[in-house]
Amino acid sequence: MPTRSAPIDLRSDTVTRPTDAMRQVMAQAEVGDDVYGDDPSVNALEARLADMTGKAAAVLLPSGTQSNLVALLAHCQRGEEYIVGQQYHTYKYEAGGAAVLGSIQPQPLTVQSDATLDLAEVEAYIKPDDPHFARTRVLALENTHGGQVLPDGYTQQARALVDRHGLSLHLDGARLFNASVATGQSLRTLAEPFDSVSLCCSKGLGAPIGSVLVGSHDLIQRARRWRKMVGGGLRQAGIFASAIDYALDHHVERLADDHRRAAELAQALAGLPRVQSTIAHTNMAFLTLDSAATGDALKAALAEAGLLIAGGQRIRLVTHLGIDDAALSTVIERIGAHLNAA
Image (cartoon, rainbow, N blue to C red; front, side):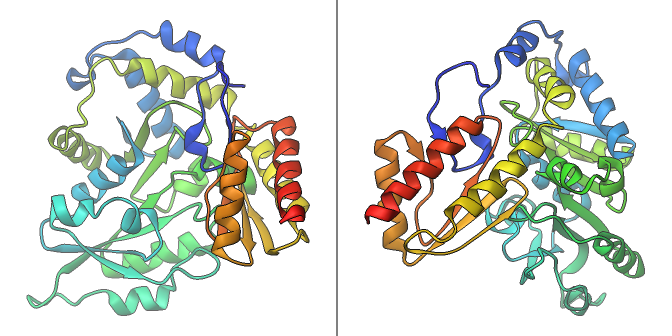
């Protein structure tokens, strides 16, 4: 568990804190200047994740947002386009960085109920090679999305589609480790269809910072240049590379506990007063209430007791390294008490 007292926080798995053992590894890390390629801990981590994903090279970045950004910048030129889900992180939650900083046009499409994009719709939106249009270059997917794992066979179909049209395939794999644990498929198998994959290490893995982009040697070389340009050049980054390396050794298999707890949470909350529905996907439980006002009141009441959730009518509750069985029981008890009394 985290080394310092923390509230019970279900807002996201980004709120995890380094364990005592992780902090010790960070304190003892070998470091150098990563911009010069001199940090041995970073070099070892990049080589390890490239091998784990079956890619030729990797680069460590401060955040998943920057990792996705430099991937798109490395794939596309100004005036080109990426096709992406309307609710995917690379379109909705990254401040329009590809458009603002790269002059890359997004073509957002509706995300289907199974977290996919309709590939027939994707194909219909690929632009012809005509000066009237932005040239389509990349299809960007997400796994997991809202905790949902992409269905078996879907990414291979997407690969076949982009190959027919000479496009690249990028994956926002911020929670790809969750997908791997949930399906029993290796990271290499899940990453195989993609030209580039962004892996976030500060969510389920519990590292305090860092994402890794993997891909071909040429792509990663371009990504390193873009990383420098957007201010992501790192110096003694071995301190957090060592934390990620520790997490790879100790925090991957335990993701199954997060998935179990999310399922238990959804089951326990089902049927409470004012609850319309609950569902769980990997480490996320979703609680749909009768109104946004009910959700906001629940959020306020729990905050007074040191328990943090989002508000609104549909509330995402995320399990992670900082939520053990005792914390889960407290969450279930306090939500139940509030809704029963409301």
